[in-house]
Length: 339
Image (tube, rainbow, N blue to C red):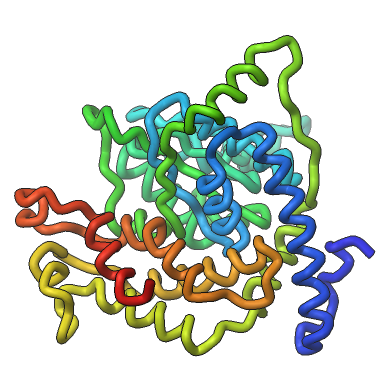
């Protein structure tokens, strides 16, 4: 029986849930291994991206050019069997260039009517390259698609395909001529994934594999229905009381106005993560357990996922910038009592 055929199973049956989780874990392990055959030295990035997709979220990649961010999105689309498209964001990009537009057509009888032509957002895996170069108007149009899974054109709503995920990129170096993402849109990304340089051995393997006559390729491992099933399974993975309490205490400890908060948090954090951060961390922990083939998440999952989930949901004060304190340092202090 294929994974997609399990979509009608009764989730109230614990044995059926555990069997589905085991099957999905095996399939996802193969999918992860396939992606690693093409993307070298980025295991953490691959895992965090897969966790975000399993949790039904969007991802914001931060990294300099040339680190295979576009290649990663293309590979994930291939491995997961998703329809993938790419948008190069520029200051003159209009919302209609992403969402689509209505055109006036005339038939043979002379009758005129508007017909909607879908834009590139009508796909399952959308890469928004250099999203901070798009104008605020275009960013807000994409925000609606990310949040509501639909777009509004000329007063009519058009549902997006399912699943639908946005994988956006930002260049951390060149900020001239950009439009920083507002906090409301940053909060819609489940994770901020920092893409760093590969290590020496991974870069050596990459050079050998990608500069020859034969280029590495991957096969399709899953179907869109399988990913939807996995997203449903994530929400049925049980979470222990210790994991729940760790998430609550960690997130609330990042709010500077919380009574008894760490003095550094009170001094250096302008505003902390909201309840959506707790929800994201809970879902991501469940998804990480599924990716590893485990039946329940642990506190280690919380500590591993806290940085990519919290860093774009917190803001440092001017004092922190003057003292050279980073958001990574603050999150490390938040995680320290639970390590």
